[in-house]
Length: 118
Image (cartoon, rainbow, N blue to C red; front, side, top):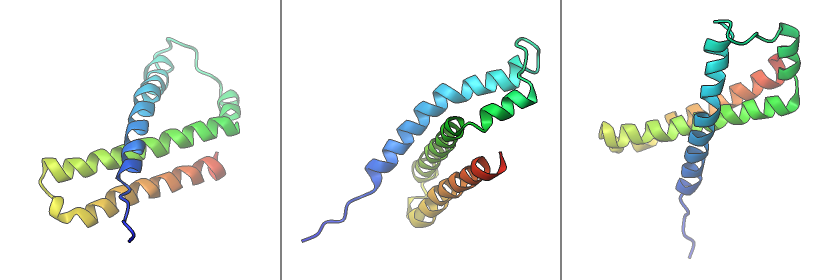
């Protein structure tokens, strides 16, 4: 007798990891690139230095992880907003496909951009 396991624990793990990573890293990046550098509070790095940092494989891996986890955090939160907030649980299959499919597609796009464009 085989029982089908739910992917729900993995999705909750991605949700919580994405929320933590986004809460810790995104505000710092927004502060630096949205306020501190443009307003001259901190001298911005020159283009060559920033490009060298972005070409580092560890930086790319960290940015990829941040992007992927944030997208899966969004997908899980948006799914349950549609389920509970808008009472659309009867459309669970299309909602799951659109939410997590969008997160997977965004992760693939982020990986491509980090691997081949930078």
